[in-house]
Length: 168
Image (cartoon, rainbow, N blue to C red; front, top):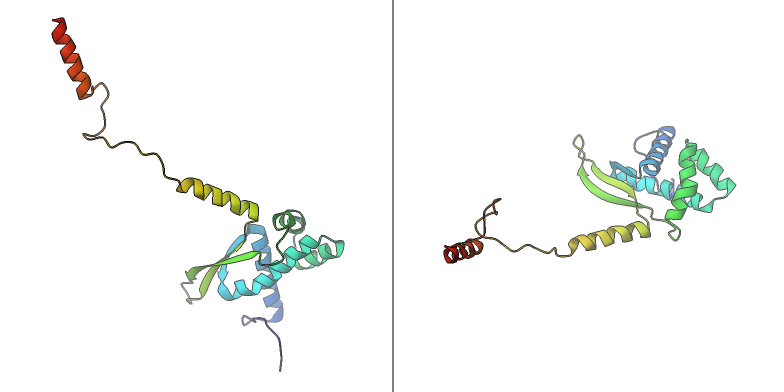
């Protein structure tokens, strides 16, 4: 009886399952946003956290372990240069799961899996939202529609008529 085995099998053999998890890990790290089923997303969190922590470790053995799991050298380079700078004080929880809906074919719950923005990126988004939320200065309401070109305002017409009357 297998005790303390906490992994989903997805109805696949071990090789197929590991290949699927490896491909999803690559997709999340490359595109930083992926739509997948909820079960796969929950399972992939462990692998993405592990890879980013290897990148934050930065040692040669960590780089070799990352290369053993990730097939692309460019992705490992991104993992060891960009992502540690992005998450200097975070130790886990690099992914955000947002429920999107259900898949059409089998009604499986679908989530959007994305890398959490860094603290600096969150501040930029928050500042932009606050700036947009401030009330804008509104123009006064004008009755009678838009002013046509060449048309004078009624007060200006009265003044012009009065001045013509004095002249003539």
